[in-house]
Amino acid sequence: MTAVSEPRVQASGDASRPGDPKRWGAWYVAEHELRRVPTFIVPALATAIGSPLLYLLAFGVGLASLIKTGGTSGIGGVSYVEFVIPAFLCAGAVGTATEEFTFGVMMGFKWNEVYIGMNAAPISPRQIASGHILYTVIRMAVTSGIFLAIALAFGAIHLPAGLLVLPIALLGGLAFGVPIAAYSATIREDRGQFAVIGRSVVLPMTLFSGTVFPLTQLPIWLQWIGWISPLWHSTQLARDASYGQVEPGWLILVHVVVLAAEFAIGWAIFTRNTTKRLNR
Amino acid sequence: MPSPVIEARDLRKLYKETAAVDSLSFEVAPGESFGLLGPNGAGKSTTMRMVGAVSTRTSGELSILGMDPNENGPDIRAQLGVVPQTDNLDAELRVRENLLVYGRYFGLSRAVVAQRADELLDFAQLSDRAKAKVDDLSGGMKRRLTIARSLINNPRILLLDEPTTGLDPQARHILWDRLFRLKEQGTTLVVTTHYMDEAEQLCDRLVVVDKGMIMAEGAPAALITEYSTREVVELRFGSERNADAAVTLAGVGDRVEVLPDRILIYADDGEAALSEAVRRGLHPITSLVRRSSLEDVFLRLTGRSLIE
Ligand SMILES: Nc1ncnc2c1ncn2[C@@H]1O[C@H](COP(=O)(O)OP(=O)(O)OP(=O)(O)O)[C@@H](O)[C@H]1O
Ligand SMILES: [Mg+2]
View 1 (cartoon, rainbow over the protein chains, first blue to last red):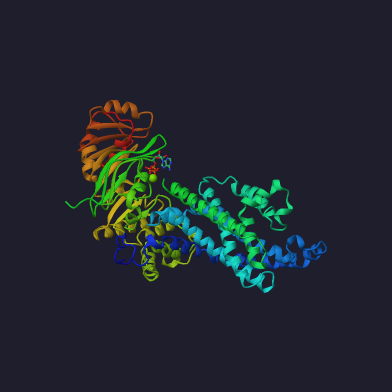
View 2 (view 1 turned 45 degrees about the vertical axis):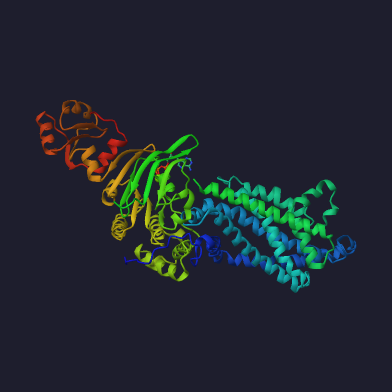
């Protein structure tokens, strides 16, 4: 045993102190979560690199040859691979977000109770919620960034506006994932709720959000799924950016507003539920 | 008298209808070592969470370092060290990393945290396990890591909720020594424990809590004087014969207590009480005269049927 002596942590309140947790708390939470990345980096990278290649192969070589015979006017005159790749990129971000905002949240509250420890330190529940979001954004940015780089290299997305696909995909991931996080924060016992979300929300949303065929192909009584689906809005924006799909200005605005609103409302409720849950 | 670092007045916490903590009032002076004793469910951990500024009180007054936890939670927590009843280490990280991430929550720079982490690993005798996964540690080692973690910010007040549960005797004694040194440096300690010897060792003053209310308060020695006798005689007659023997023993010492396996005579002079028992014709299988302990006080206050 050695003598341990260091100046005490100052009573804060003065947010100008370097590194003050009042200002940087959310970043410290993200920093903590990023430290775990090495434990799963290999499979994560393999998936991040492998899946865009698979999509390109399947839809660029396989399915595209089949679809060409029917003409491409229904998808705006671009090749099928140009049509689906932005959608898969957005869906990938939604997938990462779903993982982090279901199991990731449950981990922190229950399976690996780190949120309780953070909260016993000067970190507020609001910062814990925001920090987890920040970490997830970073994780999505890396996987979606790899996807985008590969898509650009294969000409499935076009520069320079195609770069906008990255922030669009992240916004889509947050618009879907953060409201789910708000729900996850309320779950005390895992009774397969996340599997139910996967089957009854994520899967139908992925199929009916204009991802592999335009939303307008669906009967009107199914199109509402797309209208509320963050994935439809982000996919449409991504197409606008990646190959110049032409949509009226008001519709572009609607996409952005819906995504931002879903994210903002989800964030507020996630914060509230985290605060409630940690205050025992 | 310096102003208290913790002041609780009629502190109360309701969960639905039930009061986990029911009008607790106590004060802790700076540098004092204060104990919260009580049976399971007495409300000790709930009190610790309120003092730790993570659980909102239902009513009453609470001031920690002159601040109200409802208003200044993060400022209070910046100066606390917390050892919760159940460890909440990051099992996915390695031992040293747990200290690194935790130090950051107090706004410490990476360099300072790294240095403190090494010192604390040394203190917890975990230096050789620095790179081990937390999951691979034994229960006692995890406990030691949690205790080390609580010191990363050099807290002014250290809240220890059953700190030594799961520790081996060596680790327990090292921790007592360590806590004693912290106290010498002016750290205020608040401890809950189910080990009465630990409470006697560590606490300047303690409260015995039951069902969310304070049953007694004082220094360990004073509580023993107040609620027990100087000595206790333990007699065993065999379980069938204890009740009969108790009848014969009526009036010996201050108080006689019949337990399923033995009889206790509370007396200031244990040897004299024992002689009296023998004089009345009793022949215990075994007999033992010992000093009263805090455990006797605890059991008396928190229940066990007594023949007064
Ligand atoms: N989050 C909670 N929700 C509902 N009831 C709770 C909660 N936490 C504690 N309680 C109840 O409050 C009472 C006091 O619990 P507490 O954990 O404070 O006891 P304790 O003195 O620490 O006990 P132990 O010695 O077993 O650790 C118990 O009846 C418990 O069931
Ligand atoms: Mg407890």
